[in-house]
Length: 582
Image 1 (cartoon, rainbow, N blue to C red):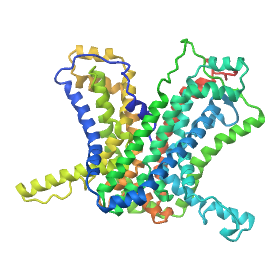
Image 2 (image 1 turned 45 degrees about the horizontal axis):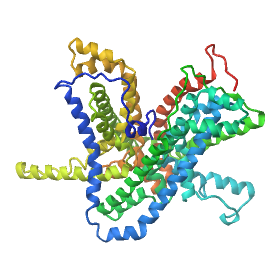
Image 3 (image 1 turned 30 degrees about the vertical axis):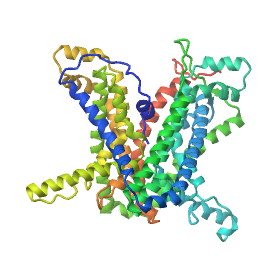
Image 4 (image 1 turned 60 degrees about the vertical axis):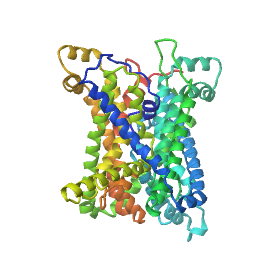
């Protein structure tokens, strides 16, 4: 989950930067271009390793996978992606249109509260859903108490551990991707267009379906694509809910069947699914460009709803917020109340320290890489540079399990080279210096979240006039000196935002962490996963609450920014009064 950036737009649909200096790069400046190339190679290496390993013979394992595992995993994955895409689209677009176009009780609250499910990782939402809906959970316990049922055979209750349950759970925490992009698109639409449709006699529903929705389709497709790729990356939720996706098949083949080649071959199939999602996203937005014919655009005005419609609008916005954020937090709080003694548990404290340390290191490295790419693009007009920068950010679209597999292979090879050299020339036994340490984890986080960092820092650069660079260079500053002394101080908000987002993403990340972590190395995420796998969810409840609490920080920042730029601007005039009309 990434907040504050648009990885698909910035990585797969690269456009010319709004401000480029066009200055000839001297030899010292070329070092920045070399960094971009190095980061692109670092992003390509895991993918190349996976493809190379996929051509290795997998023996009987592959034939077994093709016959029994892969067909079901492919079909299940496709249905899961389609289901999540459809449900997140309906919830996200519906709520976005309601809070943009209408006035009803709670609208100001829902405008930002609908973003809060972004703070709940998918695997924690799944654990909480099972805890809530299980036979011994509060939902069924209350049902039996109210109606006097004595056994499970006396009533019907939906099973969360099914494909439908997985679609519902994942959709309730991923719909904010669609809500955020659709809300921004609706706010940017001119009210004049909608007024013309209403003047011609179109009813509100027809105006939405025939005018507002087509205009917002590119943004909606981006949001749905992001939700689907986050769904494809998930391993904790789908495995716990008993849904055998391609991600689970890779994990099972790698760890339980001890077949790296078989896992690599499944990974190639998953990469094909990723490519299909990205292709659909690009095709759906092709030629979808809408421009205003005037520089004076009126913002969409919120219309008051009648009493009955207002009640339904409030319920429609309240249900996703309650189910996607409030209920999981309440379940976590209830479970944590039984394990308050674990607050002083050395294992929990150690996991928190390791999570914090990894997140800080990965944040610094990733932000430095993103800033280097953004600054190189600012320095040079070279046509080859932006496609190479796009390659460097491609890791965001690659599931964590595939990245972990692709990173383990080259690191293990380097460890072998180092071990042989140390033994032959120094008589030392080095062991696993790279693959058996946190290096592999930091590498995975760098590749996975580089696009997030780059997107935020590049946005910051776009707001700085190129005349600042020119003046500094005229006064004798080098490119590095200009960045350090002039631009970096002005970029602090963008850099801090990028660092915060990457920090939180690393704290929550599970697929790559659980596969690449050193022996006996636990983070908060793996602690929660291990407790849930043992069916002892209460043991990991406090760690889960800590992850959610950390995840709330960037979501609140995003919500405040969205409210300041969108809701307030759309509903208040220059005098601060509420606008009405339309």
